[in-house]
Image 1 (cartoon, rainbow, N blue to C red):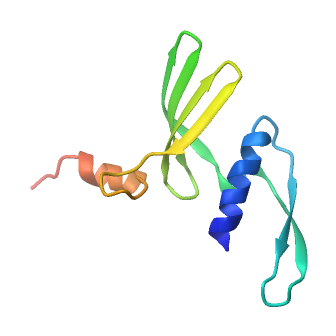
Image 2 (image 1 turned 180 degrees about the vertical axis):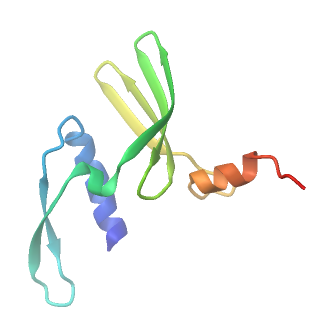
Length: 109
C-alpha cells in the first residue's frame, strides 16, 4: 500500500514541486471500503539531499539522495523541463547510498 501511495505522491509532487503546500489525498481502506482523507507534504515521501550538482549552460544536472529511503536519483532541469529517475545498479535494483559506498570504498585489512 505504501508503494502505491509513494508512486502517486511522486507524480503529484512533480506537479507541486515548486511549493511545499500540504496535499490532501483520498486513501481507500481495503478492509472497510471507506475513504480516508490524509494530508501529506512533499517531504513526507521524498526529502532530497543534493550530493553532486553540475551546471552547464542552461542545463542543471544533479545526483540526489532521498533521506527517507537512501535511494539515489538523477535529476535534470532545463528551462521549463524537469526530469527525475532512480539510478539502477547492475543487477537491476535501485541503487542506495549504502550499496554505493559498499561497492566503491576501499576495504582496509
